[in-house]
Length: 302
Image 1 (cartoon, one colour):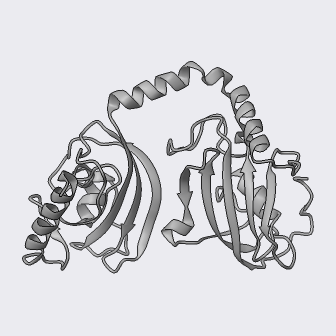
Image 2 (cartoon, helix red, strand yellow):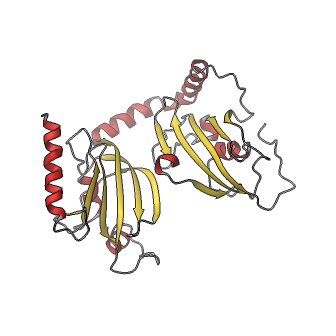
Image 3 (cartoon, rainbow, N blue to C red):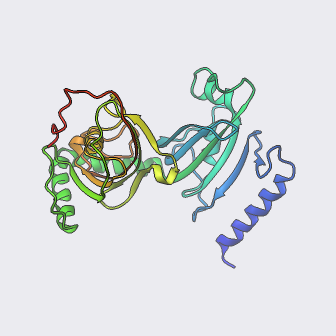
């Protein structure tokens, strides 16, 4: 029996022994008083440490499992500022591990976020935090990678063009891009007319880098994204153009150069670097027609 399997079995035994005394079935209680349940074991036994940079999928839920926040974030972990803080939760996990934590909602909002408790959470109640660790970098590893990137970022625009051209040639993509540079590859035809301004659309999407590595997926979260098409700040420019070319039921792949993607600064979360082309597979699940804008130019992106 290998060492990793032994450690996993010991962990399961310890967790189960704690479950008997737990306020929440299936959960164990930490020394600080919050509850946790490990849902996925990673290959490494090296836990996160204060100062490390983590990339993680994070979900905030009410105690009845209603999700009120979800997203992938890169953040630097600090020493816990108070017993039972969310930093303690991060420090319990290794790379590729996932766990659900039950923590004080008031402490999280008032002490960590320094804001008031939302109206949908009653005072004195707890909340759930689901953390799925994607990657752990030490502070030195993070800054070495950042420094190496900054050394050649001035030429990154040209570099992106080379990588994108090589990708298109390798995949034998013959579809011509639109004026903005968007490439649209239809996998499954839709029906009806194209999405128009004011329509409420529901989509599933998966975002990947050109090397195939995922950075976001509503399918993996099993949480379709719904929004009013044309409203500001809903999606990036390239996806707005992409969805405007789609019909209900359509599934397509879109290749977005950075000028219509995350641009010269990258994403605000740090997940998407500057000058990075991205791929989105989008499925248009539903279109609810809104008020039609007669001045809408359906060919503005052609």
